Length: 459
Image 1 (cartoon, helix red, strand yellow):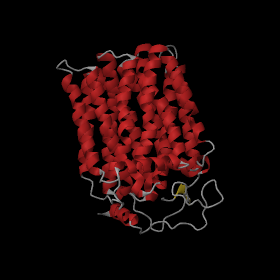
Image 2: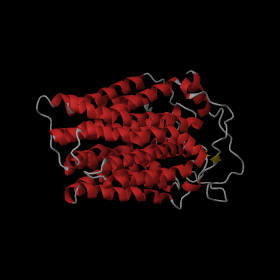
Image 3: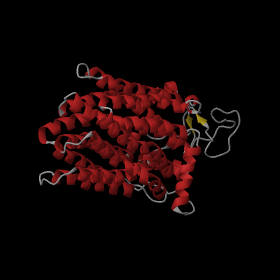
Image 4: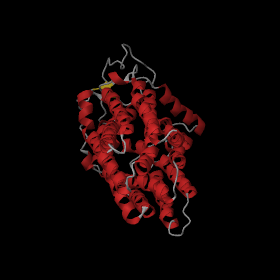
C-alpha cells in the first residue's frame, strides 16, 4: 500500500492513535461510564493526532471509492426522477401505485438490512460492493430493453426497483463499513464531507439532466444512464486495493450477531436518538418523494423539464450544506449541528404545501433548498459520529441496524403518501408530511446529542 493507505493500515493496528485523556467524563454525566454502549470520551475538534495523517488527496483507494460513488450517485439521481416519470406519463400510474413503487424501493432495507450487516462483518466488503453495482446495472437495463418491445409494465418496474433496492442494501451497508478501512478515524468527517458534497452535486445535476433527457429521448431510455453509472462504479471499486482488516472474533450464529448489533444501537444513548430523528425525517421525505412529482405534473401542469429544474435548483441547498458542514461542525459543535440541521430540514418541508398554481416556484424551490441544506449537515455529522462511537467489529451491524431503523420508515411513508394522495388530495398529503418532518428534531431533546460539541473517541 502507498501513501495514505499505508498510514491507515498502521493506525488501525494501533500506531499513531490518539491516547485517551485521563479523567475524561462521559457527555452529560459527572462519572465514568463503563458500559461499551454508553462510553463517550471527548476529543476536541481542534485537537491534533500524535501522527498527522496524509491528505486524503494522496489516498488512491479513497479517491477511487469517491469517484465510484460520485458516478453512481449521479446516475441514481437521474433514475430517481426518470422511473416515476415513466410510471406517471407512460404507464399512467396513480398516487397509490406510485406509493407502491416507492415502497418496493425501500422495503428491502426493512427485510435484509440486519442480516446484511451481520454477514458483512464476517467478510470483506469490496466484493459485495462490486456485485451489487453490476447487479443493479443489469436490472435497470431491462427497462429500456422492454419498452420498445411493448412489454414494459408496472409489475416489471415493481420487481426491478425492489431487486435494485436489495442490492443497494448490501452496497450501502458494505460502503459505510468499508470507508473507515481506507482513511484514519480522524479523517472520517472530512471523508464523509467529500462524499456527501459530490452526492449533493449529483442531486443538482441529476434531476435537471433527467428532466431534459426525458423530454428529449423518453423516460425509458433515460433509465440507461442509471444502469451505465452502476457499471462504471463497479469497475472503479474493482481497482481498489485489498486494504480491509477483518477483526478477529468468535464465529457465532447469524441470529446472535444480528441481535448483538441491533441491541448495541437501540441501547446506545446517542445512536438510538439519532435513529429516531432520522427515521421520522425519512418518513416525511419519502412521502414528499412520492407526492411532489405527481403534484407538479398533475396539479401544477409542469413538464418533465420543469420538474427536473425545480429539483436541480433545490440541489443548491445540498451543495451548500455539504461544503460548509466541516466548518459548521467546528463552529457550533457536532451535537448542535445535528439538532439545528434537523430543524432546518423540517422547516423546508413546511413550505412545500403552500405552493399553488398561482404561486409555486418560491415555495417549491425555497422549501427544497432548506431541506437540502439541512440533510447533508445532518448526515455528515451523524455518520461520522456513528463511525467514531462504534467498535470496528460492529461497524457493519451498526450500519445495518441504523439503516433498518432509518430506512424502514421509507416504505411506510411511500404507502402512506399513496393512500393520503388518493383519499385527501396531493396538497393535503404534503401538509401531513410537513408536520411529521417539522417535529422530527424533538426526538433529540433530553439526550446527550445537543450537548455533544466534540468528536468522541473510537469505541
